[in-house]
Length: 371
Image 1 (cartoon, rainbow, N blue to C red):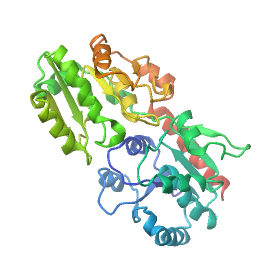
Image 2: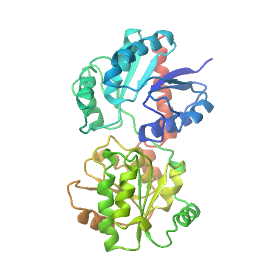
Image 3: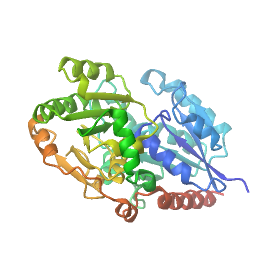
Image 4: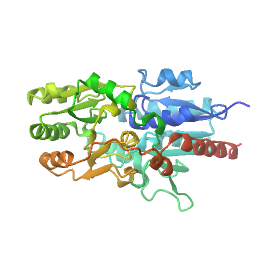
């Protein structure tokens, strides 16, 4: 029997949080039963595209969602779902814009339409009015409601969830065994960092406003003054990276800050860190913090991040309005040992091996009900 094909709707399959979460589940799926295909909204190739194709997935490219091309985009959505009537389950991860995709899916009779919230805020920019419009039109275009945390669900759906439905919190699970502490890997990575016996702070995330890199550098400036035998390593890319590189240089910190770019070995580089630093302005439930906990790291994070993130007791929340001095002091008073958290993550439903089985059954049940 052919596997049930599930359409996953994303922006682009790069190494971001929700994309990594999807791939974590995809790799663990019984692909004889369930197969993922992807609708993306960029013309360029994503970091995970080659792997998706190797696993048997299909990739469909749509135009970028912009207010100026709504009419053309809606027309292309309608054409897509008219042509691809094989999809009985559409799982959309593009937050408020899921409304548009699921409206088109509903109009051609797709029976299972999942909207999945991955954020707890939007921030403020020129697109905000259009994003609020998209969220307002969510209504009953979805008929299943997923979120990475309770806060994320409340933010996107509010009172729009019918009384007969509930929000399903699907954990941003990781492969726990992949992140288990390994002394040999730690030594290798620290040699790469040329870390010696330095205190190594780590951060992984896109260089955009949300991740608050500018404040992160201010924290490290104060900490490095207090503890000169320290360094900061950051992995990721993004449009603000050149600005942050210049700020690091202007502060005279270039010899103590490493920009790693996109890394495929996140589980390894976390072994070389002593503490994970994450002062984001807003998040849903960051996959990278689950990964850091799986690696046994102590994490010092902003209090704007939901407490649901702390699944191991290894997260310390700091007021985002606190001074860089206070952040630095909290970091310097932390413990730096890697703790085995594997069983805690499994018990709390953050291991992909366990959760992929649940998701397989969920998709199969809803697809079969549609037949």
